[in-house]
Image (cartoon, rainbow, N blue to C red; front, top):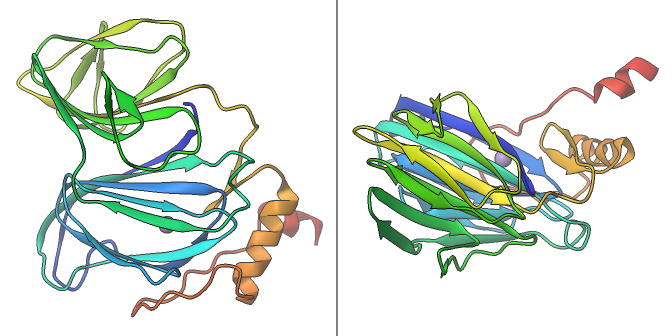
Amino acid sequence: MGAWCFADHMGPADVTKKHGLDIGPHPHAGLQTVTWLVSGEAVHHDSLGTEQLIAPGQLNLMTAGKGVSHSEEATGQYEGSLHGIQLWIAQPDATRGLAPAFEHHGELPRLEMANLGATVLVGSFEGVTSPARHDTDLVGLELVVRGPTVLPLRRDYEYAIIVLEGALLVRDELLEPGHLGYLSSGDDELFVDASPFARAMFLGGVPFKSEVLMWWNFVARSRQEIDDAFTSWRNDDGRFGTVTSPLSRIETTAPYWRRASS
Ligand code: MN
């Protein structure tokens, strides 16, 4: 939907002070990671030298560009429920070959409307704009719906809805966690309802121009680009930098098309 290309709904699960996401150093290229928590805490480390605790209501936004690596770890302090989502945004050709970057936003703009609370992670909604970087025309919101509501849409955007808690009535279909609701472009508004409440990510954007090829942690345009990224990570040639982490570096097998031809 727009440049939004992947979603990983995490938990809810119980974590300890020592064990949480426990995702060791691994590479990314050609995408932004958008990390958002509903409950719990986690720590992000990356090859830019960033160490960043994230808590509910905060945004970790990592732009991979030509290459970055990171780990996602337990905090050493927090124990209890961990629940959240990580979304990926495909970068356009104009920025996907550029340097990596990281942003943390501890506070984000919010709107309160009848039966609706919205937090603007990226882009703009109802005249409220997030300070977060975006490389294409898109929006990302967390919605808390507490009754019948009409959401304004942009006619040039397509949208996805991912429910994190509760169940959301979208027009006449009930959407629950584990499913993604899709809306094609061309509509002005969307009726939603929930009782007593539902929490959902609402993601939209102008349909992405380029064909996106995703493999493992890479977003590219061709198999050759994926092959090059895989080889750089396997050989640790410096493209993805180094993450200081107690966790082991994550390796993977070669892309299937390479295995088939060798
Ligand atoms: Mn990652």
